[in-house]
Image 1 (cartoon, rainbow, N blue to C red):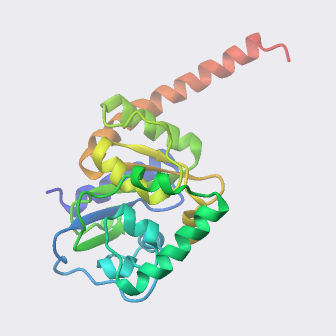
Image 2: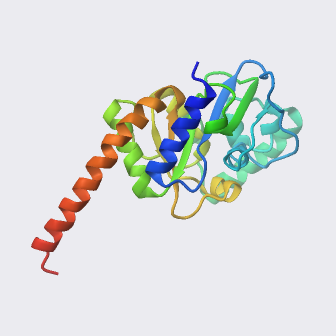
Length: 239
């Protein structure tokens, strides 16, 4: 297991290389509540709302019931809804179907966790009390490009098209296949405050150190290629 200090170093490296405005968020799916970590108290409209709290510096864990307000998030996290929430979930899904936002046949195609977690830990990467299963990084496209190239260089990228809605499917998708780019859905952007000029890169925690090493190479290469392309533009562009 990596020590907390290693995660702190990784967060600082990523923040410096990518000019991050938000702290990377570490998410861990556990079979039991962790000792020494505060349980979430309160209510949030979605599972991705917990990302916002963690990026702001909070360290906590949730239990399945904390996710009941979001039927789509419960689907991606393989969390069965309580009977009292099933009706509300049906109404929410019907609204999405009626609006044309989602089609019923798409639901089985949405990636989800293999099993229901007993607890989910959320924390800023540098303060993660346990080894993160996935790390969520919000960045501008130009910086996300660098991180995506680093993931591909190490063979840790999914090599798939950018994911759309729902944003939370990027977590199980990345666990299964490697780093994914997620464009961020409208609900996620409202609940997390993700800016119009930001998107997500989601990586497996186990891959993060190797990807961070590759990021040094990619960043240097892109700086050189930036100078090269600017020179060619100045020499060859006629308009």
